[in-house]
Length: 149
Image 1 (cartoon, rainbow, N blue to C red):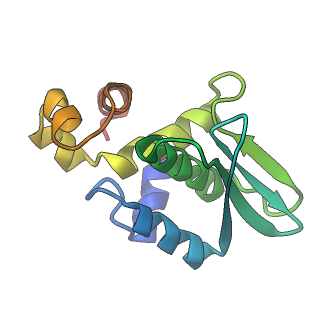
Image 2 (cartoon, rainbow, N blue to C red; image 1 turned 135 degrees about the vertical axis):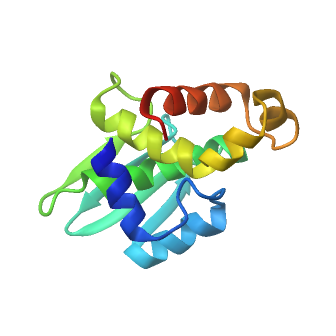
């Protein structure tokens, strides 16, 4: 995980330093020329690359906080798991929990709930005042405990 955190720090995007917003997500997509498509899906979302172009698809029916988590998760796949050539696809929530999926999750959870926020608020405050779901807060606490980030 240390390699990934170093790679993210070089991007200078404020990751794990401040809450990343939907505006931040779309700014990063413009920076990296990623097309985002919202449509009804059977999965939360997926990242794919075809003919050298990058895309993120997200289920348009997701509630805002879940959608933002999926968007950052898929952006994590782009940042860490994009092959230099050929087609690829990564699907959110499909299949078993691989290292690749855990890395994308860590990127997403730390994007939404940076370390400074999790260290200054109780889990209940994150839920009640910040509007995060109990599941997202619990997963973010696991990331802090397991990886120290």
